[in-house]
Image 1 (cartoon, rainbow, N blue to C red):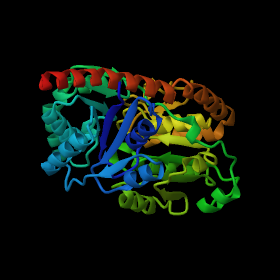
Image 2 (cartoon, rainbow, N blue to C red; image 1 turned 90 degrees about the vertical axis):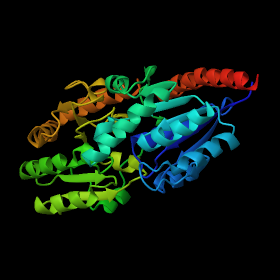
Image 3 (cartoon, rainbow, N blue to C red; image 1 turned 90 degrees about the horizontal axis):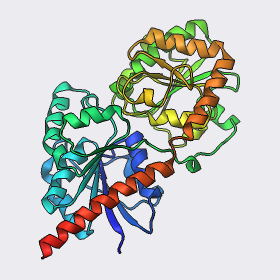
Image 4 (cartoon, rainbow, N blue to C red; image 1 turned 180 degrees about the vertical axis):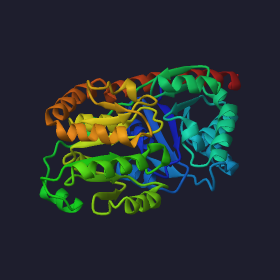
Length: 380
């Protein structure tokens, strides 16, 4: 029996949880069973990172989120590469790669990483994306959700077969490093500076404006604390302006996209994820690996990962006062912060990369059997 040839398709114009998930699949799946090709639909950082990590990758550039002209190109790649299963991630891939795969009679797997209605800054674009997704979702063989929370939304869009596979973190890619003078110097702080961080896309759905508002409140009580935003995205300029208007220019550190996240994790004291919507929150697991206490919004799939006052703190989304109170609580109570970090590290072990890869491989194998069955009928 030959290898199963998988085509992974994603936008790739930024690096977030979905992109990290795809890279983990591309690198971690059993090479004796699977051949993987990654397609990026945007000129962006994912292509470069994939090349650095020796992942076979190509870019088929979409001129807009609704550019259908790439469908014939995707179809040609699927034929030339003798693809058995197509795995899509995100609205661009769901629209174009689903239609191309359907054209060829290939089984389609889709991983839903977030609530689609929250992925767009403009309501009209979100509404159009939802309409198009409802049209193409029934074409999927299996929809994978990264939390049980997302299953209800995907059912409404017409998915017939849905399975939850929690994101897994490859601990081997993280280095357990001690804080160094280099990282302190790079961030412009010293080893005595308390550091509260938010890591992820600079996108409205991440609630980072509330993080900055909370920072202003916390600073009045803890003037030595610094706040860090690590990530890139469409809100970068707006967040810089908000920082200035709040008088936080000397309190907030913007790093842009930061690939060596372990360097930041080694020096931060608290990790915040103040999202307004969230499929699961991969960065929370990363912080838990390093035994860092987490504060997160009680939205989406986050409560499936974080239990309030057991392995982290949960706050209401969009409430900067509550977020500030939670940050102050952990800064004031070092014992609580340490205990939550330890409990979080214990939680991390339940979300292994091995489990994620095994469950995803089973989905591929079931889909491949369908693909080969259809191929026999066409050739009969």
